[in-house]
Image (spheres, rainbow, N blue to C red):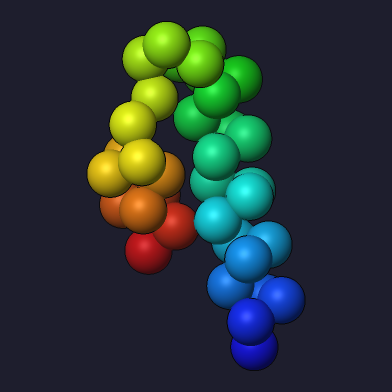
Length: 35
């Protein structure tokens, strides 16, 4: 379960970083995208 959660977070972070760039992504946005 922990691995699945970790992967969801990483996938969400990657998606947002590609869309918005490092300077424009917050951890709150990553958490929201993760679900």
